[in-house]
Image (cartoon, rainbow, N blue to C red; front, side, top):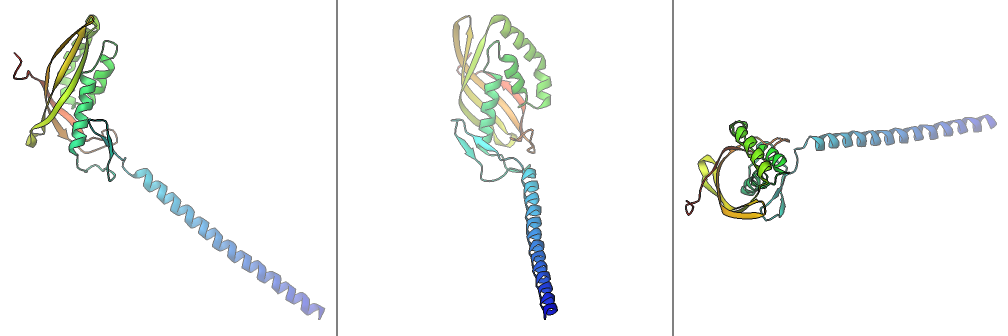
Length: 204
C-alpha cells in the first residue's frame, strides 16, 4: 500500500512538472513571437521616409496626410515656401551674416547656377563687408509665369541700409524650378535652375 502511494505521488509530481514545462514553453513562444514582431515593426519604422510638414508663407504649419516618398507630388504650398526660404537667405543679410546666408541659399540652387554666380557672390560679400551694407526683401507676390517650364515671378520691396541711411526700391525676381526625386538630403525635391533679377515696369 505504501509502495502504491509512493508510485502515485511520483506520477503526480511528474504530471505537475510536465504541466509546468508546457506552460513555460507556451510563455516562451509568446514572448519570442512578440519580440520578433517588435523587431519587425522597429525595422519598418526606421525605413519609412520622413514626414514632411509644409510651412506656409504666413507661418502656419500644415502636416501632410501621408508619408512622402521619392515620387510624391510637390504641392503649391511647398513651392511657395521653398521660394520664400530661398529669398530669406539670398537677399536678407548684414555684413556679419552675408557669408552664412549665401551659403544656405546655395543649397537651393542647382550646381550649374552655383558655378555661374560664384564669382559675383564673392564680389558681393567683399562689397557688403567694406561698406557695411544691409539688405532685406519683403515678398508681396509669388505667381507662376510659365507653368509648363516651372517659371515663377516674385515681386516685393527691397530695403537697403548703408551707414544709417535706408533706401527702398522695387524688387522683381524671375526663377525656374526643377522638380527632382525627394531624398533625405533634399526633402522638397526642388532646385533652382535659372535666376534673374529684373526691373519692374514702373522702374527706370
